[in-house]
Amino acid sequence: NAGVTQTPKFQVLKTGQSMTLQCAQDMNHEYMSWYRQDPGMGLRLIHYSVGAGITDQGEVPNGYNVSRSTTEDFPLRLLSAAPSQTSVYFCASSYSTADTQYFGPGTRLTVL
Amino acid sequence: RKEVEQDPGPFNVPEGATVAFNCTYSNSASQSFFWYRQDCRKEPKLLMSVYSSGNEDGRFTAQLNRASQYISLLIRDSKLSDSATYLCVVNIGTGGADGLTFGKGTHLIIQP
Image (cartoon, rainbow over all chains, first blue to last red):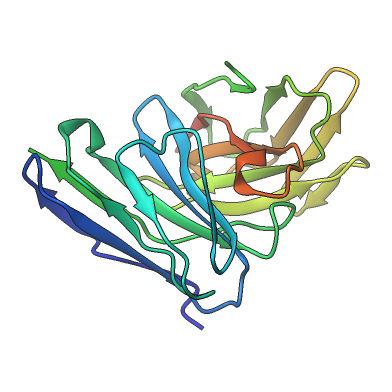
């Protein structure tokens, strides 16, 4: 039981490049979400999903896309990277929002 | 919009002391409450849920005061390993991750 896994752990991009951050969970959780964490800002919700085929926007969705084709996977796509997207990205999953949120180890992204 | 507020600290506390910090929330419809712990450059992990009757787990005690809209965390006999950032999380029960609000965290440093 690996829990929540994220790849890559570190990434450096140039402005304008695109990439996909991968997130997978093996706990059969319906709820998955993506957060970014910046110094002094705390965790901010980017996108979330309440089940396969269902996604919705969070607090800071601009510049990011998501899809949820399976229960296990919830990739986050950066369409055209900008320096403002330099951050630590966490994926989380849970049975419901009233339950424990399990976080992945994070992806540290730098956009030059 | 400051829905969940925490004193960022840092709280510098000698080993063995008792330390307590609060978290205030603005939405009276909030339904569930949690304390998460985040170590430096790591993902947040659930420390404990906060129940209306309060709950205790070893050296840690969490309490909820709905009338004054705050939750508290008390750590007794603090250990060096308690040094971390403690995140307050409030769920207003929308059913999605948009119902979860994370505080920015309180930084605790236990000194030998």
